[in-house]
Image (cartoon, rainbow, N blue to C red; front, side):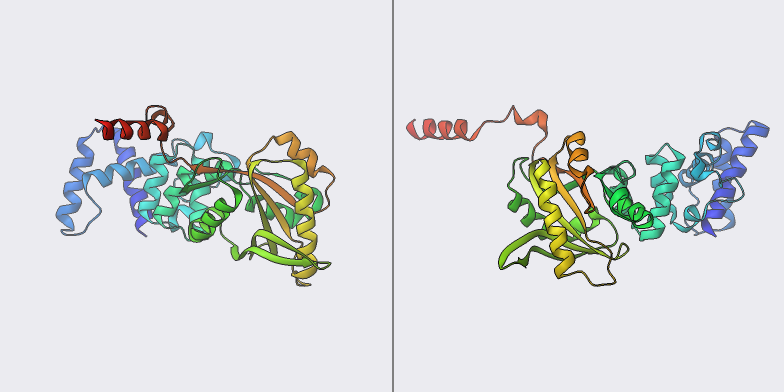
Length: 321
């Protein structure tokens, strides 16, 4: 396999450099020899052979600091995820991430979810490793252990909506509309398993009409997921409202084979302790996460640009001249 070949070429370079003190010339000679022996075969330029050396070193010299999650790795037995992703994916991992545990985590997710190189780079840039499972939840108390673990890993904190350029004080309905309009990117950020059911989903309870901001079904969790958008800070009463929505969805939509509906209060900001207190005695499974929006202008430029009022003033002056 190509990845194994690149691994062994990298190992050969490192071993020869250590034993014989070879310097940069070993790579130059090796590239020339391979190109002469196999003319027209791509992938053996000097630059790529240097990358093979870096690839080998990335998972060997750092082996002493690997976490328990990656101790199966050694020079002769590359972890399956590393073998299964393309060379281009591996290059992104070794040059963008210093921690071997993180590299293998992203490699495993790339294999599991079939990420393209562009998606892999996006997930690295957005810090998915650090955000996964970081929300405030009561899942341990409200769900059976197996589903609780899956549910915690399915929710992030914060969610990064860098595909939206809205002001931080945008109204909840504006945010909802933009998320639905960019549903493919929204689903990518939510993660694998989310299927979109609808926005402002109508539920009738005792003759009264209620509307869920966003309703999803999670294929792995086998349950509905209600998302309630809050443009501002999380408040304790938001948990009570979500509990009502979950009860209504369970009674009106949930199939007998479905698991209990899960709620996510997605807010602009939250104080962790307030969220923890609000969820502590709730029996319905609820998570509280923040979201981040892209800014239309870098912060350091905003103060240097004229305001609308200043522009109007200048226009009036120009007309008067």
